[in-house]
Length: 315
Ligand code: PMP
Image (cartoon, rainbow, N blue to C red):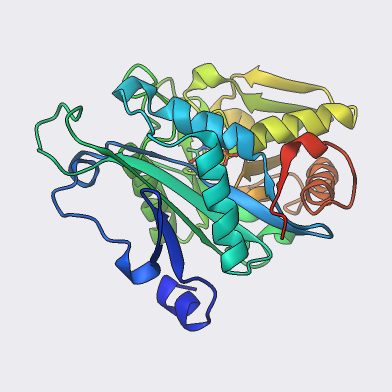
């Protein structure tokens, strides 16, 4: 569903912009905004889940940490504190009576001049929230998705920091996604500069082999995904051996018993095929099923585990 349809459905009508709650249609910026021209912005993607105790934001503190940290290499100091951003987000969810939603905070260099050095530009900040279901489509969580290895490689961390969510570099993910869709796949998988497996355009990758779990380490040029960290933690609690600094060659994908994606938007999504190769039985495998069930039991609060990971949006 697009934003206009959401608005017609009455789901969303307010955005928080530089300290004010504004009507959705009034959340506008100048065309000479630095971040529009050079991608000098940082952002987050967070989910808020519907629980018996009302909406609960998952791992908000960790997302805030990454939001502030992503700006560091660009001297982009977010001019609002954690309490202000938290209060604004909760108020957006309450006002629009959302039970569950996706949360998009963004901070970017604004309007002043268009030299490459952005430091004279003001840092502007916005937060929007909206309902967002399964990112990789209906049925993806149960049946798994088909992915293709992108012809575009993931940029190296020696070129652009990969452990930050910076707006500009997402064109790399956009290229990979476009290519995947064009070729009839749901999602792409990117190799790094060494030709090893990095991650999806907006997801981290996990591989299961002989009952053990592997995921590329940060040195492979991946985002330090918060869902990745959640999966690693939950899998270890379930008793699995997790190798969280693996190097995974392209060929190892083909011989995996199971593959799955993790991400805020994608949650835990099985991968059933990579290009022409069927992975395992071509369905959601037993380890993926175990982890996916544990993940959804956690985020929808069917268990009391990890209360420290939830920020409740009280009435
Ligand atoms: N890799 C990339 C490139 C991403 O954009 C995302 C989504 N933020 C992820 C991995 C998954 O990270 P997270 O679990 O923190 O959403």
